[in-house]
Amino acid sequence: MALGKGYEGQNCSLARALELVGERWTLLVVRDAFYGVRRYGAFLSHLDIPRAVLADRLNTLVDAGILQRHRYQESPPRDEYLLTERGTELWSVIYPLMRWGERHFATGEPLRTFRHATCGTELDPAGRCPACGQADVPPGDVESRPGPGIPAQPRQDPVSVALRQRPHRLLQPLL
Amino acid sequence: MALGKGYEGQNCSLARALELVGERWTLLVVRDAFYGVRRYGAFLSHLDIPRAVLADRLNTLVDAGILQRHRYQESPPRDEYLLTERGTELWSVIYPLMRWGERHFATGEPLRTFRHATCGTELDPAGRCPACGQADVPPGDVESRPGPGIPAQPRQDPVSVALRQRPHRLLQPLL
DNA sequence: CCTCTCAGTTCGGTGAGTGAACCGACACTA
DNA sequence: TAGTGTCGGTTCACTCACCGAACTGAGAGG
Image (cartoon, rainbow over all chains, first blue to last red):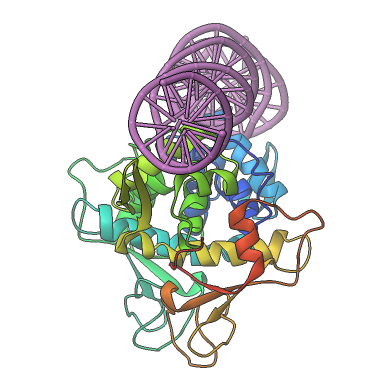
């Protein structure tokens, strides 16, 4: 939500959630984190987001306990950004919103499909596995596959390429 | 999401959804529509949203087929804004986001609870009815009740007052 | 050294959000 | 028939978030 920050008048929990997650780009960053994107440069090239905005969003998400920084090398110091438990719970928001957008505003075939990794069945629009009957398939058990709708001029950044090449389990590192 | 408009680079359906629903205030307007708010003035006083922004969001939502205008009197001409089918489907996004905000950022007891109207059971965080086992309780079958956490200085606008006074079925007119 | 990469920060310009004032149609009252 | 109030906006000046391009700084590699 291209947004300012506060909704002070609103004492509703939705307003508080939107103060964090409703800013422009934020949910796309979180979605990429589900896809296994973990590094500044990967978010940057995949999202075409201004560098300053990305730095700000990552900091905000870390401060909110949605992402955590993890130092993966000391010299030069480099961090990656991983979803916390709190962040992982946003799957139940992101997935239905994705499916909603796909149903109503898609231009063709879906670009990605999501399956229950343990049984291979495609998830229903609410994120359940129709075969197992499992109610909330946790994102760690979801496999994302490239869908039938590949655009004419696909993006060439490393994240897009990796996502097109092979099925991939959510939350696992992509690159 | 205080946001600009486009995420052109992103061919993902999430980005397209966010172009509509990700702007600042938009999801709060839609939530109020679920609560049964239907008129410009009611949205205005309940949300404390700038008049111009509200007018813009209502137009955008109507153009996107999420709300529909309904002329309820001719002189002077007055419209109300009702959720379409497409808009109603956003319940599966709004409800989990509300519960997520409540779990992680609430300051006290919940302000509202949501029950399956036909059996009286409180919905689980995913929007299911634990008693009936009904998977997706449609918003029209959800009853919203004032919760235990009433703020010290409650809002006095008509919508807030009505929501505090009595249980109320979603999508039914509030005032 | 020189160059390259990575992860940011800085900075000037633009556009969305803000809030107060204004507007026009109509109803109600005296 | 003038005066007042309501409702649903529009207009306008201001600010602040976003934008993109340039810059920085630490380290790697040659």
